[in-house]
Length: 63
Image (cartoon, rainbow, N blue to C red; front, side):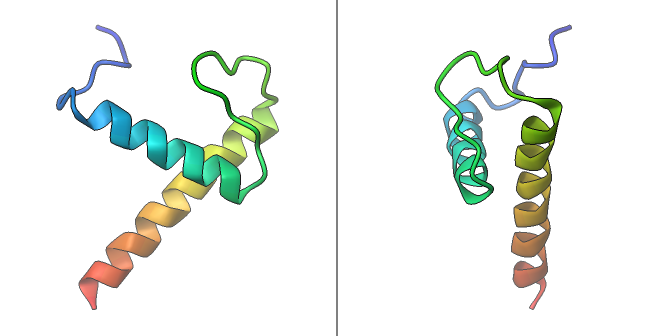
């Protein structure tokens, strides 16, 4: 089974937008489609920023 399969197919666009915003916040230049030229550090910083934003959003919803 592919790891790219979404439970909710409509979520793909929202996830892509979220990823692009996180990349912008940490100064990584993502482009639509293939981004295999990113270093592990750059890719990790995007993922880390996404997690940071999700935690922040969750904490704000708890208030």
